[in-house]
Length: 272
Image (cartoon, rainbow, N blue to C red; front, side, top):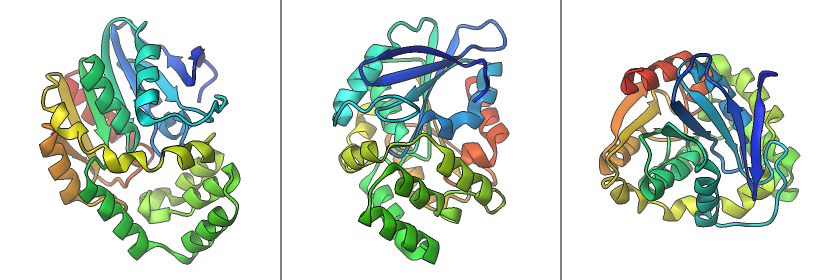
């Protein structure tokens, strides 16, 4: 990220990094990475949204220099995130990529906000099953070898190597090498992944709860997502009463593939 970043605070296990908007505004956007275990660096290409928002990038335990303080459940982390965000004044929009979308949704349900944006979040068991099937059917020799090393020796290094091998499961063909570098250089946490990876299988209940949330709800899917099935995501969005749009020429990491398109969809939807 650029040198003008300012670490706002570290409270408990949540770290926020603020990028003030380049113009005066009361619009705030909270950006939550996926994984679980990826750092806010995985969302760095959305820093271009500081033309419209004050940005707050979230880092969970063990990521981006944030110390790992032991296992905490999704619910505990979500409560801590809400507590850490309570001092932000003005309009609040919360964005989550993939696993991060669960936190965005829970924030909206529990705390209320002006709107949420979910990027390729697999809310339902059908979406998760589709991801597993796609991984099995599309995995390459490189993925298999990296997965074996990860299973033999779980560490931050083997975790990064495994994710870096995903190729067209994650990234458009034009951005595979850039995606590899993003994963290899991310300040990710293997332990956070290990401790929290199974939570997503029980969070489908967030969808009906989202129907009671009256703020704006935008779901963005990658046109060519290699991991998640579009039809599953459309159904997830329908169950959560989201407005659904597609980011053209993008894969699962749409914010790397086409950050300008993703930013444009968000600003157009929010009429900024």
